[in-house]
Image (cartoon, rainbow, N blue to C red; front, side):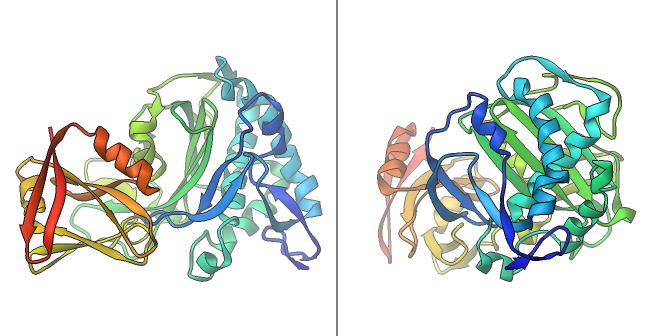
Length: 359
């Protein structure tokens, strides 16, 4: 017995698919894959390995599941299936509102996958988002103050659902202490749909994407697919993190909200730099000389691990140290070995530090 996240009904809940079950029937790869969920600035919590498009949540009642949500899935399946499979197509104006609502519903449901510990610590979207979308269920439209775009994805992922909090900044004003909006990204096969919802209406600004993706909500006419620049793996993390959005106006910007999307800053400890790891719980150390070298345009890479036994591939760059990979020791070491550069040993009071100067 539980309470429906959308309508608030208390009773027995059903298993609502995060990604509609119809996706398992259109010819996509169904081999089991690792699943994870969690904070934007940390590693996702491991949810185990299972076939894609089968993940469900137990926070939705039967009335919502088989009613308005099912109608959104029917429209999404009819319109998006050829695009997901990479076939050129179009999105008619008559379907665009429902598709935008489907993206929003999918994002809201995906946020319910996260473990209770994360949700208890504040991870997720406000309950008002769920309630308001339910109240508009008969219209099959997204929440107000939203924009959505559609494009083509080329990369190794078969699917992904991401959400990132955003702020609107104005030159000369203090950095906001609360988010004003959030981005939504759903990747399925060759398709990517991207949106932004302004939760503070007074901060809504006109927005476009750096990839010049066609907008399908609010509607501007029939959308032909694909158009705009391709979203690939090189741009993936920035795109799903909300960094592909461009606000209109010379003194206004829209960007990820730092407290939720960035780790706390590194700090100098003697001759070493303390670097918070993306597990969110631990730190690692590397010689401060590497940061000085990176500032001069000489990047270095090294392998390290934290108390979680997760192994990281770190690369220093002019704007700081970046985690390029977090995986098993075997895979990370293979990626490190593949980097083109000269391996060097840096001695100090903490012993020998092995790294590679990247060419």
